[in-house]
Image (cartoon, rainbow, N blue to C red):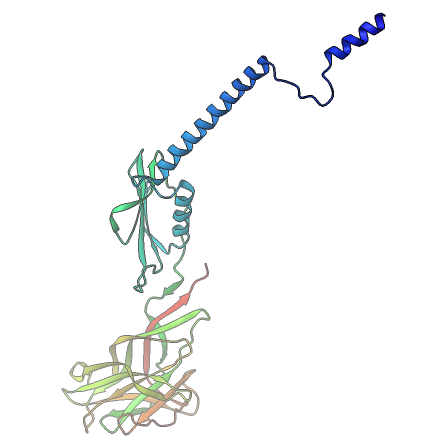
Length: 325
């Protein structure tokens, strides 16, 4: 009997199979409380998201975040070819052409202090400067520098090539007789160009007045003057000595490739000689890579270059070389 009562009690307590279980009042209150907390959290998230969206889309605020602004800043710095301003709060740099006008452009970044924006201009525009990052609380620009030589260095004027030994021949300068000398100076292996700036010739004047013309020509593969003169100067012979001496001649500077030689030619448009230059006639080369040339038709044609003859001459100029970085 006790077992029967016990079995009956179990049957009464347990719900029948397949019947849905109800929700107690305590469970319902608990669920409502949890739901209220979740809804409150979601509402806060929506509110904060909305406020953040309003801040990003406001026309008075920046359109680029900090990361984008820094990326733009470093990209400009990476392309810089020079700086004209470097302070802790501003930098002005030169970059290759950005505007399509064929000229380098100038970019400036600046910050006025705590709470001020970081601004950017290109060639001074826009004015006022565009804001790329608003309300910057702190900024300090520092620079690591090192001294570097420029990639190309031009030497001081120097003697490039000459022939100054004994002379035993003379050449009158006149309309039908132009005296010349071609030469190829020895240059260093890292030379990128050389420049003729002046010359000296051993000469004298035959008259008390008159003008001669000194031309510099490029030369061809056979060492003859080629084409039109690349540098020209007129000289009044009244300043020349009456007996042979070194006559200085200043020339308009002309730059030449390291593989190109040149020639100096003393000419005149007068039929009679107003001056005479000296030279050397022999049977051995008086100078390496140097050849005497002569024209009797005002430079239209030139005699075959002779390396066993030479004018007395000195050529001065500069050499530009490429430096190792």
